[in-house]
Length: 398
Image (cartoon, rainbow, N blue to C red; front, side):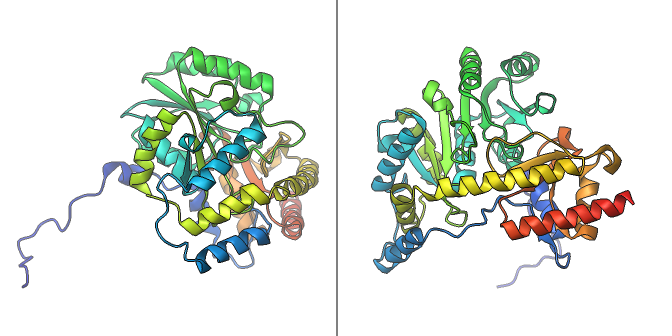
């Protein structure tokens, strides 16, 4: 049977207007622009330059061999949920009861989407300290929320209670939650215990949900990592994962922890979006949390050495850089003689210098004059990348 299309004026119905109006993610968009440049060296993604521990690999193989390839429990396998709750309680002085307080997600990206879509009604306001990880913004658009940006650049990228008060005072929509990420991507800034307590008091005063993305918690240098879930667990939705701590980026394992009644609501959304993380992946995650506790510490020590080396090189070139206290990024302001447009600088550096960094505008409109460099790359790639950058800048300066 054939349809007569001669009288058809419209071939299809339109797409969702929210998706149509969404700008491409600037980080991914820049990657596409430089992807085909010959001999390009990338200092862009937060991809740990380490192999996955052999014990984790073997657990994955064993799980598949033993036919652990069927549907998992939607909220997460019970053994993994128990182990994860115990791990985060122990590491960060939390006090969650058990498996009813956690969901195993398809990485932190899914966790963010689950939380936004569960918490936010149309036009609910979300406070977002910036610079911030760009994909948050698209997830917020899909959840019909409103971004209330808080520019932290003038305070060395640290949020203060006064900044929160001022933004809430000027908000034109109901403010329901704040999104915290620390140590922060892209700046590496984190918060002391006293700073966390002061912010927690402000969040409580305004009855805010606290969405706390602490994926880089284990990569904190020279101080302890303090979680909002330690002080205000009743209003904190805690997020973590294994991509940064165990270099398991391709496994896509994330965790949402919270009060049991909160988790019950979030599970409705998770079950709809993903249903479940693959069983063999969860078996590997169990081994990571239970047996591979030395790897994150070793990685952190190496990252700190890389940070110190690259930081001194950037400062010698005239960049203004706030010393990162965690994660594996340097967020550097361009020297005056190199202009104020990080997009232009990064593209020319890629084309002529053959090294890719990320423009600061990918993380905030207020960060146009910045670039982000990832020191998660191998020592060899970092050394070569900084060599190329130095050569390019010396050429520009004549």
